[in-house]
Length: 50
Image (cartoon, rainbow, N blue to C red; front, side, top):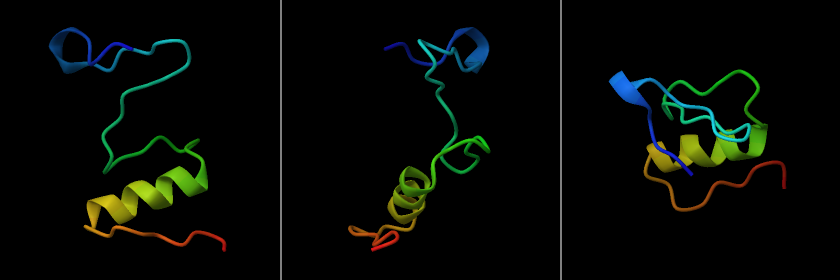
């Protein structure tokens, strides 16, 4: 897996994209997005649709 490309631009690798966790792409699945939001808020557990 590769990191950000030259000049800080995200480099897609096999359909993956490095993205700023504060600005997720609109096609991000709901449960990983909820986990990332929880992580950004310092939560250790995020119940999503349970």
